[in-house]
Length: 250
Length: 294
Image 1 (tube, rainbow over the protein chains, first blue to last red):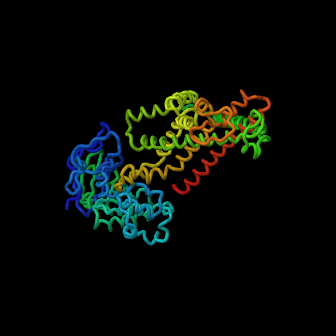
Image 2: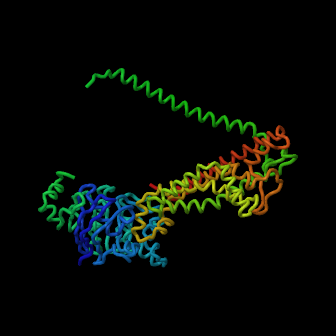
Image 3: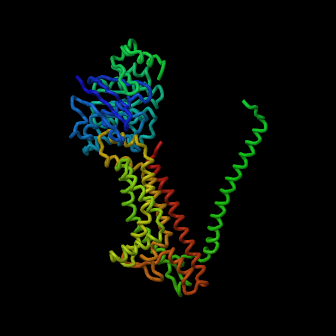
């Protein structure tokens, strides 16, 4: 089923174009990796889907961005409700300066849930979902900063999952992590695929090859090529893609 | 490339380095020296006057004997009153400026205004306070009028320190919160303010230090020349430490006689400012630990 879609999307910071005529479709329960050199527009593209770019002054968007066939930039769309449907994981682990429990409960609380038992159950299942439960179950009241970087990032993923989004947007989620923590997060992405649609921006090409079903290569604001990950990494049709994945530039 | 005498170059670099080091070190010591001289002068002159009676008794015999109790209480009332006024308004203004307004002409204007506000001489605030609060609004010479005037003076300091504190909060926390469907206000209240709180408190207390020593704004709005009783309502006049100091040094009944009391008053004032600074430090560390950042 078609989950995410962009039609003729152009995006500008001030007058300089950051995305040029992007047409892309992403199916439910797949992982799509966005790759490309720094400044190619892949993070900007990712942030279109939860309207995070709205926070930046002086930007302009043309074209359509759709989730479940609905244009999320059309008038009357409630941004807060939209963002509930899309969980986001950031480059650096950024848990709130609150307890481990409260970090995961935060999304529930700001969305008006007050039932204590419900919150407790949801926090537990979500932390179990990211395979962190055994490590933190005895210190849920402790500050999230006492966790290691890798644990913090899994906690941030749990925080995003607690409000049960259908889409997870990941912006270089492992770039600040060591190899072991990275592989744990990658395993997690595999597990989560059955329930969510995942879009991941990554600089690490092996990672794209390992975790994704589809790969989209961006260069200078253009979508150069998109296809199954296998095809992009073994038999790309564009020369630029070939050059990038073989490390000749970027 | 031109040939360089390595030895000579090294020597010259070293000489310049030690000269610069000496200069900065010397200036540093001079500043500390000036501060210590002022402090020790006041302490030396004032410490003999300070006693339990001095800080708990009314002035006596034309302010040449007795204590400064009403001035201490007056100053505390004024500082408290000005903060009740300046803190919420200042913090809200800063939140508005930093969290809500987009970069543009409006923000620039507000910013310029606050900066200008902090550049206005305090005597002008005094005059304004007299015209507005004392006369126009009819509060008379009162703690209310004085507190409001001092509050106006503190406002730019509170706004600026709060803004700096809010700016210090990493945007990724805001994005994470907004990304979970939180509104801007929920994000500000539940994430941004708790993180910024230690620094906001510090700014607040530093402005308390500033306000407690001001004389000009209270001159025409509240300060009593001699009032040997405690205020009973916010519409009462009150004595205040800085003004008391001014009075007994320039226009007391017997200036020579009351000189020691002047030094004692100065010392008490300095101690109050010092204590607020220590308190600021302590609170920042205390709340900073509660909101532990890594």
